[in-house]
Image 1 (tube, rainbow, N blue to C red):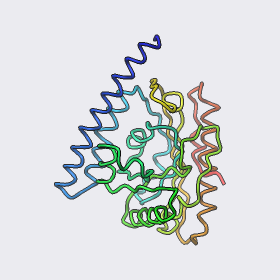
Image 2: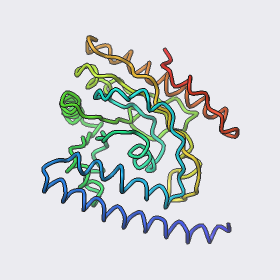
Image 3: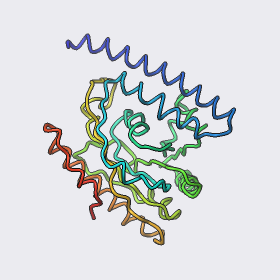
Image 4: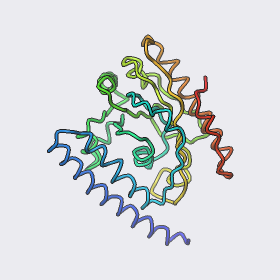
Length: 258
């Protein structure tokens, strides 16, 4: 397709996604307010907002490792970060209602930020130590209450071939609450949506790795947990990059890598 046609197609796609987001975040917030149950709004994101958003963007999913979270235990998902597409992809790929740890700038984004705050998601300003400490406490409370929380421990978008640089502080809530850390690897979005607004259809692979148990660990073990989580994600990203053209993936590599 010629570049000017892609501009027209992408403009229509983003308009549709924007309108769809306004509609479903509004429905979710009203429903949650009436019922007093944020989980209703989270379920709407999984089952209504994200599937259509992905279809409009031409996103296909290939998901491995869901069996690693089939026991229903609360956990902290630790995922590499590629683009905006991460949010609908993870809502759709993971079989539970997610709360995200997000940068504080998203709080003021119309509809999306309002929805995230209404659903009890956690906003953190990583430049402010007090905000970071409050974020750790908030995530720990969610995990102890039985929630599923997803964090991007690198703190920023990284290419799959870059060192992910998972920050140990992101794992403190899981260690404090004694819940498993579940590494998650995303691959393919950089070809679809890099920095900017150019959108192309494609396949996104999601690999849920084996949980890293934290029960009984001291808080200073968060550094080791961060290292193990980053190693697991990096191993999977390397294998996905090596098999990107063959569509072959060895599910055994979703196991933990020390």
